[in-house]
Image 1: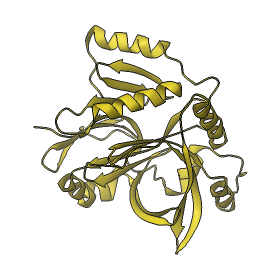
Image 2: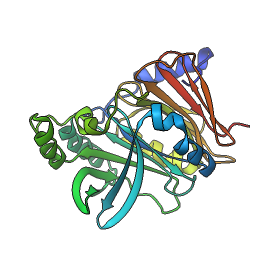
Image 3: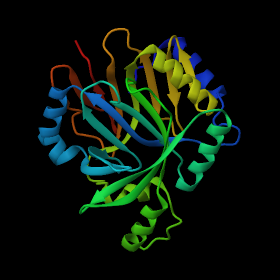
Image 4: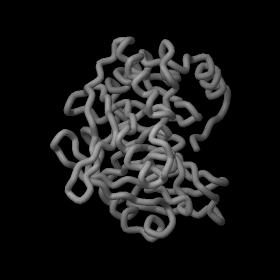
Length: 289
């Protein structure tokens, strides 16, 4: 977890408590997915590690269709959201997808953001299976330049997904919650349960744009110098710091299904360290000296 010391963090907590939770009646937002770029050596070592293959998470290799453009994605599936690790840290390598606990409420969040002046481009993301693309989730993305490192979007699991799941789990299609959407792919015997936080260094101008959009959307946040701390429903925290030197991922904070005996530490690549503990938490630091 992020280390928190002294009166500064106490002041931040007070500011977050006073911040508005929603935008003019819009529903509270939670994590849908997080996409982060890491260096190729770290990605490859983690991808090939016995820890991942035997213990860490259910890894799901999927092909998605973005309106005719197909893309392979490698996802670590949590109970209610997923983490995508991509090779490299450059344009488009970081994306934060927000949603609501009930997929049907996301359209209210979209309406609230648009009412507050945020432009959103809508599309359908489809998952390809046996060569056939089936609707997976709805996306409303905030427009960004091609050179932007970070992207923000609102997402909602597609109603057709729950229609398909009903044939598998015999539950009503109206039960459109996050855990049900991912249940067929989630493995509760593995360690990874949720992303609980992250620290990401991105260009200062992208933080300014992110602050403007999230403020108009009523998301709880507080300034930290030229940086920004964002807190979602349930306490998931994202810290964005200006990339004065090397941009990229600085830290991932994870919540686990169970504690790992003896709190082991793993090194992947030249500059990352994954530390388990205390309890059902893990911290993965990047860009270490």
